[in-house]
Length: 106
Image (cartoon, rainbow, N blue to C red; front, side, top):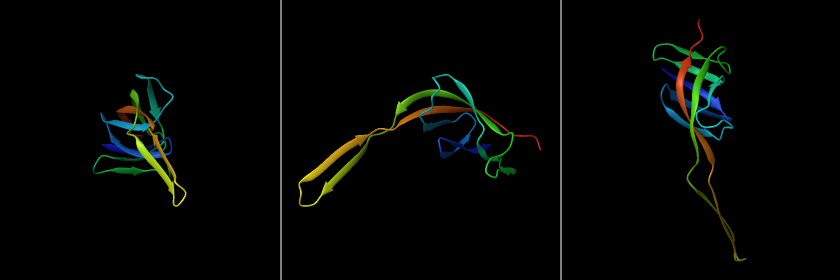
């Protein structure tokens, strides 16, 4: 069984027991929370699709840890002016574990 859900404006696909990196959450490590913005649930044969979300569906998740992503280099240059600028950026993320996908009863 897998689900498509939304966190922080981004959509993710996950199964139970899988770790997913999402934009930084305000929860601490080990905190448990529920994701109620579930867009699709499928178990292979049956699928439920929300418009945009499925009512009474939720995903129980737990924060495993926080970190920073790989460095992205931003380079700017303007011709004939000797203008060059190099900057780096590392995006913060939270790693969550999907514990359970709760399917609403039909």
